Amino acid sequence: MSSKNRKLLIGLTFATMLIFGIITNLRSVLNPLIQSDLGISYSQLSFVVALFSTGTMIAVFFSGALIARYNLKKVFIFALLMAIISLFIIQYIDSYYPLLIVMLFMGSGMGVINVAGNALASRVFLDNRGRMLNIFHFFFGLGGILAIITFTLYQQEQVEKL
Image (cartoon, rainbow, N blue to C red):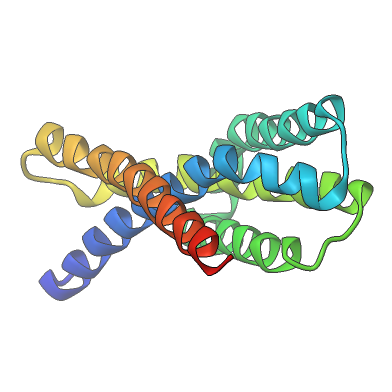
């Protein structure tokens, strides 16, 4: 692997974990908005969250076998497409049952991204592996912080417009 490709892969691993942190942490702050927009109960909302987590657990369970069979690159790209398609579709959902399906699908994509991202990180971090993996997981935390700050600023802007 050339030095340029390796640097590109390192950047990809950090970006993956940053986006993973953003999506994971935005879920919690968006739940009340989803609940009010769709008019669903707390019980229904908990089922939505449970399906996301179920999709993640199922995907994590099978990700290793998928990577072994189809290779890391194909599985990683497939998982990214699953997550991107889910994020795109979710903005057009206006009822409860399609939301359940999309959240299961999104959870599956995020679970595979988690496993594939960690597998990719362990392959590209050859020097100072422990330190690089700590930095890699720092990006998850950074994504969570950015998600909450951005959402809070957006909410404040919306309130000021009223």
